[in-house]
Length: 173
Image 1 (tube, helix red, strand yellow):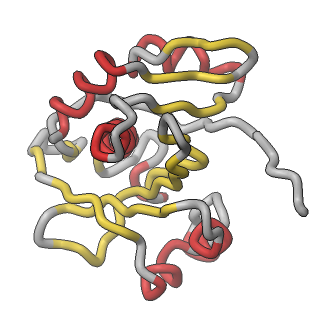
Image 2: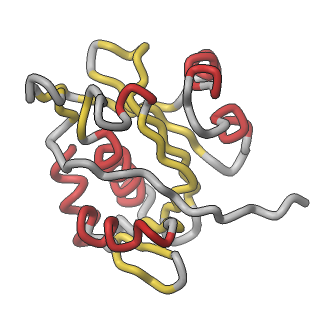
């Protein structure tokens, strides 16, 4: 059995918005989160400038991969998240903004925050009181504490507790 590597998440929470926000115009666009379909895999490959191997995430039977899209435009994926529902919380394996939502020339802000808020919502829906955990890259621990309200649980483990999860969920949903 292959050992699961805990490399640490390194997504940037650029801004907590009410949905996602166009960087140039400041306009907000309502979003929806849905299960990544097999037909989506072509558009989220490394050849399309995505960093992670989403095909492998999609094939993993204990993980659920979700896509963030703008309402009315389901074919353009704004970001992806890979989650595992554990017995008492939801674990975030991967979070990634679409390539056009990264860097100084990104199109939309709020994508990563929206995906994390969805993980919190899923945790509430599955009866886990909003608890979410993830392993962070060391240099981003304080970033997640200040932007998401995550708690540093030791090592590189971060958790989102009920009150913080509820705030994030209410902001986006």
